[in-house]
Amino acid sequence: MASSYTQIHMHLVFIVQNRGCVIKKSWKDRLYGYITGIVQANGHKLLAINGMPDHIHVLIGMRPKQSVSDLVQDIKGGSSKWINEEKLVMGRFAWQEGYGAFSYCRSHLETVIRYIKNQEDHHRKRTFIEEYTALLRDYDVPYDDQYLFHPVDYLAEDT
Image (cartoon, rainbow, N blue to C red; front, side):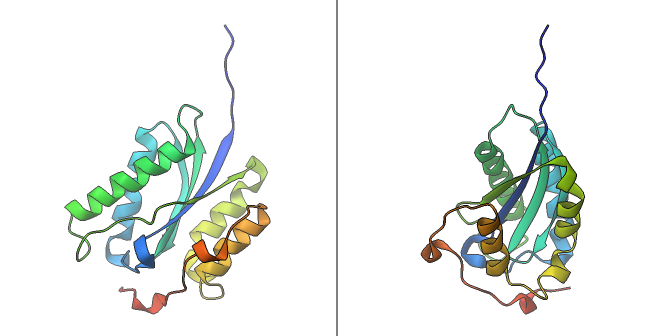
């Protein structure tokens, strides 16, 4: 019997609606755990997760049974519902429409994992816009500046 063999590593980036800095240190680990559960329930392996008050990075070992867009929809929809049910933010929480998805070969995983784990240090030197446009340029993804996001101040984050 023939089998299918794959090795798909996907780096996902998505942001809070209107770039709101609402992901607080006091509950972000619970959020990351919840997202990990969504990824695993869909048959994938979460390799790294971290972010800032307004955005998140997720590195996943993907199984080919699900499209990237369906997985992102499950992550964003499920985590939004959970955040709202737990009443972790004032008002209604939602993720911004759209996302970034970038693939990596196995030999680059340690670098990407380190990059994701060090988001706080990384953003002391580089804004989200600089980070995101660099990823788009590095992957030759065409984009229109008018659809990119405006800078925010990370100093609003709690402890």
